[in-house]
Image (cartoon, rainbow, N blue to C red; front, side, top):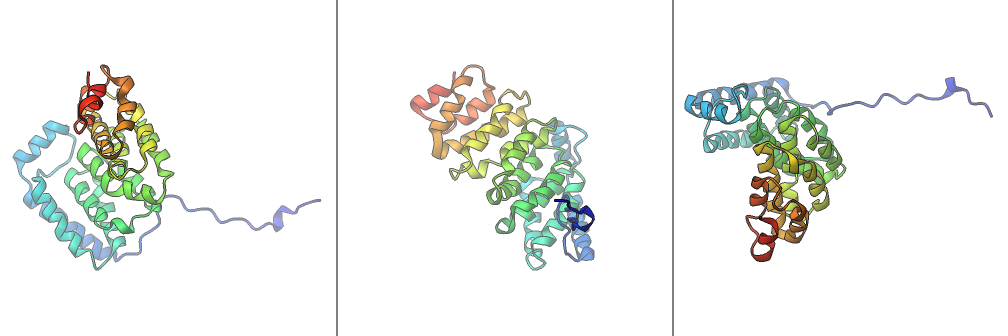
Length: 260
């Protein structure tokens, strides 16, 4: 049987990356400009200097106290309720694009406030944001507030996060493991979380170790035996920060089984 290829209908090329957003671009630009103006006004040099000492001089930041930053973010969470989720994503697109610490935190806050709307398809957008990350704070916020919700709707995202955990990007490694913290707290994605944590057990950076230890601590709330079993081979040789954080809520024999 001979098939005539000319008569076959070609499939249209599949779009790559996140879907375009149907938003009022002028309105989005106005909100982004307002947010940046407020952040600039609230910034303090001493706070910015402290952040740069902690994360490096190349991390762009305004220097804003966490409580003040949260309040600014909440003002725009309320402001964006009417325009909806797409507008929040569009604003966050711009805020994450700069790599600025506080702008990224506000972006994650805006999207996280729409948690029930976050779906698995949003991960492609979050992947673009992750490429702009410059610091552990924003990486943790992206993971816990955005990626974790996307993974709830699309569990295969866990495989992508395993790739992140092995990447050369420190913020990506942090976001990868932090994404599991809200889920393991509910007793979900335990095996995937430990699979992602495994290659990070030898990471030498304290910020990554903090993220791993925090995730394991959250897991002990419902599955302490799983954490104790996972950390057993690392007793006496695992990073101290990870082991001590993971053991925070453990007691008795479980705690002794983890700590040297």
